[in-house]
Length: 263
Picture 1 (cartoon, helix red, strand yellow):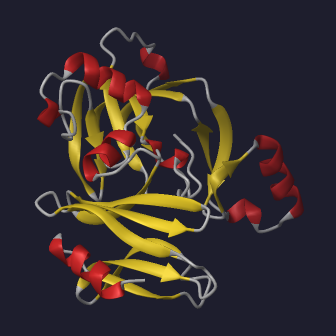
Picture 2 (picture 1 turned 45 degrees about the vertical axis):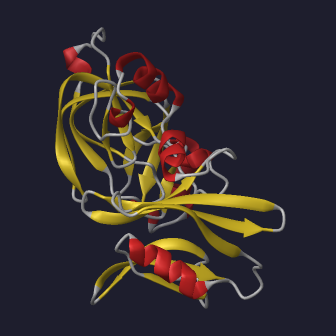
Picture 3 (picture 1 turned 120 degrees about the horizontal axis):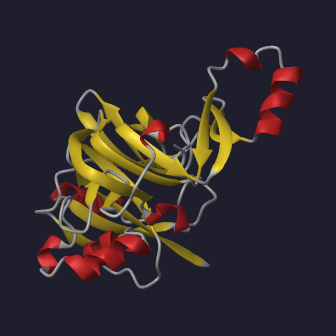
């Protein structure tokens, strides 16, 4: 692996990169964002037996974004690395045809978002902005206007979290309304959520489970929000009117972590 070349390419977009062999479960193989006394950096952990080669296949220094490919004998995984508002990020990207930063950003838009963009956004340069006529984006979440939506005010929830699971920090929504979805119970031990039956079984068989700060959430519901949406890593957005909530397509990528939509 051309370690020095990779460090140089990451440096061109203003980022630091460290590559080293993984030695413990606390530092698993893969790409992550870590911090030290000098700030955030990209961390690539490689297992000694893993014959993987990383290559930067496109870089946009002004955007502070690059497209990284992990190549193994039988597979290729692509990752969009960059800076979004306040922090560096890495995101697995689906699609074999992705060859540059722009196509990676487009591939991360769900079909409903791309359809809305095609209908409402005429200028190509506006299609990947955080806010345009088709959507508002905050991190991994897209909010698409739903002007025809009518909801029962009694069913609207306040200050409700939405999460991609896996222990990620939730985004909080001032007003939220949902339909459908599967009820699950979530705690730090089960960030992806468990069914009601599993939850009941855990409480009966594990004396400590009752103190795990459980929260009932809903998996893969149709969710709509309005008002303020806030998160410590992102600038607060204010949505005027109801918007449908859609998660990016990282969960479809070969290199993705386990991801679910919880609210």
